[in-house]
Length: 331
Image (cartoon, rainbow, N blue to C red; front, side):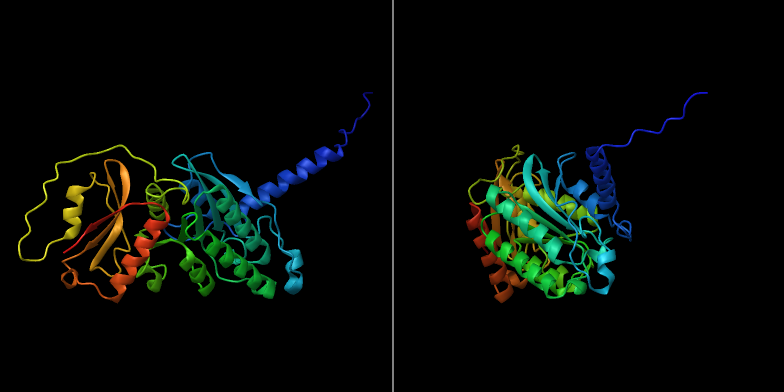
């Protein structure tokens, strides 16, 4: 009779590799499934839509929290509710972190705050944009003061990055006080319509759903250099006949005048819905990125008030920090 044989016992290295594969799959699945609701994507789907295909390299994938109170020692998920790493946007390196609402509501803990800080610090050191995809219910109370300390470190890293590399905050879920504070440090805020009314009023770009938000981020990055040491990327020149309409005494739309002068379909207004009496944004002149600052006669006859002055000053400072020339239209 043939002798029965047992399968060979895996070596210690094979056992560790098998365990690592299980942890990797667990980290990618989360514990609550994808974000729910029309037009909403999971955290990993958002990263896939944002970055060039096949370029994402994840960091800190197996990090877990250290909390032991309230039964948290039995609830450790690899990644701890935040996905961090780097990839490419239109061929240029960018660093990204995405809060995963399927894991502990995307709440900020000491552990995932350290991941975000490490991502931001690496972006500063190599000179690459930072993109934060926010979808969180705030600070993780089970972590106590450790989570608050983590938030402090995130804010500190954001402050260190100001004027060094572009920072974009993309609000795709609940906007708590901590989220809004972190987003306010960023150079640009992009959000879905109706996420938070107070944010929508001052957001730089508004979009209908997650995919539209991420497309807007890619477009915005095409005007920005990777850091203060670089210049904005050139684009193919799409010229046009600069037939500027004759201006009568009645109010006119300054955006239409600008569109006739810059490269075809290159004007991208930012904060379009805030302080409408001043237009700020980006466009291209013969393929080169420029900042646009212009009075808008359709609103308050283009006269500046406090909100418009603050809007314009902030935009001019940003263009100055990143070596973007400014084209001014005045009426």
